[in-house]
Length: 84
Image (tube, rainbow, N blue to C red; front, side, top):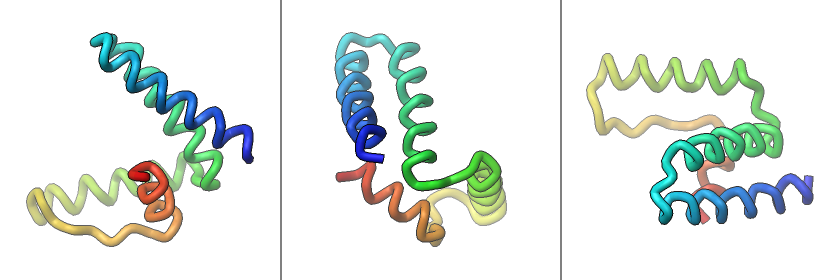
C-alpha cells in the first residue's frame, strides 16, 4: 500500500504541473488515475462509488444544491486524505 500512496503523491504533483501548463486533457486523465488508486488504497469498489454518485445525484436533484450530506466512513477518510 505504501507504494500506491507514493504513486498518489506523484500523480497529485503531476496534476498540478499539467494544470499550470493548461493541459486540461492530461490533467483529467491523471485525475482518473488518481481516483482509481485512491479507490484501491481505501478499498472502495466501483459499485460503491457508483452507488455513492447516484445517491449524490438524487439528493441534489430532490433537495437542491448546497445541502450537506453525511458520507460513509470510507468516503470521509478518502476526502480527508485528499484535502491534506
